[in-house]
Image 1 (cartoon, one colour):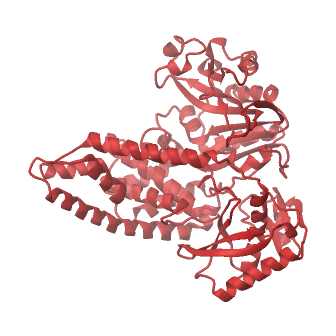
Image 2: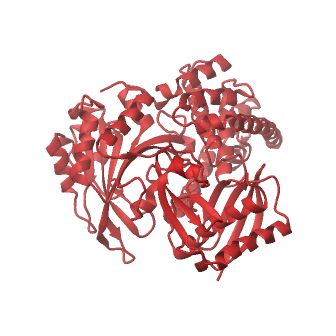
Image 3: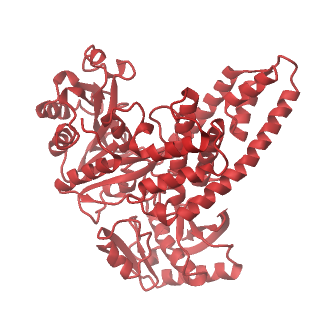
Length: 600
């Protein structure tokens, strides 16, 4: 195996697929575009769903990129060797172009060739779909792997729960996937037959890559039909792959976190590997500061708040403060650690540098605010302790309340209780914690089940109306107004933008009149593809976070609206109906929200 830095792995992956005819596209924002079903971009395929569903991508049918992602479903697991809330996903896609005949040999080449990762073929295991009543066993993928050189004994089959992707909602594109794993314990792997992969002891295999073959469409009757446009969607986690290639025990021991670890050691006087508790605290701080840095530095702009993305950001910052205190991290330290993150990624994600002032301001503000909250938590603990007799116990629900409301890890509650001769019902706490996790995950799964992309007619019209709203706000309020987020369903649009105050009644009426005037003109919505730099020169509104030269889609509505966008649009404005602003809200300091509807 090759020893690689994060920079060299990114470049190697993109160069490899560029040599196979792929266009290199830039990472999309962490905030999904026009997708109300999830808060963050959770995978490399997420921004490309419309194109996987058949929409034409301006860069062509073969794409590759490194996508910024955030997943918070396992936030309480952060601190172990592998979990991260922010991560980078290396990926490549075929939009109705190549399929298994090309992708599997390319995967084998990239993994095993001395020119690339150079992993010994005997150390690679692959899994394929085992088949069921809906769809046949994926012998095709298995045979292609064996033909490439994978040992037959290292080919395993798993059911849908292990080797199947999709559909994103209840219906839509889906298909088998094939996963690539590093064999870390050959003795245990050799005991298994082809259908016993899941019976292997933990640590026997470590997944490194995943190729998804979208070849079916699940219809409303639950039947799986062959898909007209067959797609390939792959994903390789940068951090985990670096960990494997460099023989590290943890993703936190790669070059990505090197300078950040040194900064924490300098600020606290503790060493990263001092003991188990210190290592966990380091890892939580490292992960959460990196995630907060990318959220705050995103081109669409996220700030701590009590709702949606802002709530997640606030929770992550506060969790970093809690664990930082365990190792003596002084107030203001999160910003010092964040600066090492910005420096590490400056050449890859220049938006972090551009937004470094905002990152510093918001981290310092939230850290100071939470320090006061912690003080309140200590008071709450003292109140609870005062009601208990000597030798009494804090019940599990109360211990969880201290954690959930005031940010007290149960370990601190136990320590403080012991100092007062009290106990804590840790089993009761764990039960309350598990119940909370199950509810959170169920809610997340329900939200995700709604689908990754909604191209219904009503949603498309509201998306077009969002363009008109954006343009009208610029004309009525300030040309400096820019989109900070959007959430569009078939019932309403939600548009976040930078502005210091709510609109006056007169401004609301003027915005509505402007938008409805364009609707009445029944103007065509004209799409053109052009290089990003040309779009900038022609005055199109956009985040301009991609590299120059990338081809983008632009949408023009008369001389009223000019935007870069990849979502679905109405063909002409007369289809929309009457535009009405339903509500204004405060999102955070300097960010306002408008909710609006179309009345037919």
